Length: 200
Image (tube, rainbow, N blue to C red; front, side):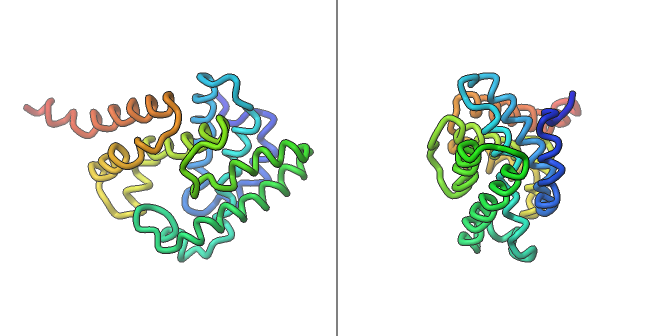
């Protein structure tokens, strides 16, 4: 199964050099797939807007000083102004790339409205916004997300899962997003704890 829709490969190739910091490239591909899953439950959402907003949402981190990136998000965010700045840079980058690839002004406005605020606003401003926000957070529940978060903050898997369960899960906006998060958590907890039962 191909990760990207065929029509999005060219945009990805234009965008990926903006995503080669903070594991954003792999994060983006996972989140793009999670958008696809959520869209199966919400067919009324604008699919193209969701997918391309997701693909381009974190391009703005490429404009943030590398030595400050890992301190500009998470529970102990030291630079909230940089969290906001990456959204604004992302809007600029996404606007230019989408225009370059022939998207209309109206489409660009819809996609960039999601990018603008995807981390700094909590409430859903549209169905599409809620899908992208949830897919962005759901990456944290994947094996890659759990490992990456542990590496970023130098914490073990059990602590990562505790954070996801207690602090991230309540912030999800869609019913199916919450269901996916709980499902991925159950898998992760089972993987972590199965050995204890087998060895008894």
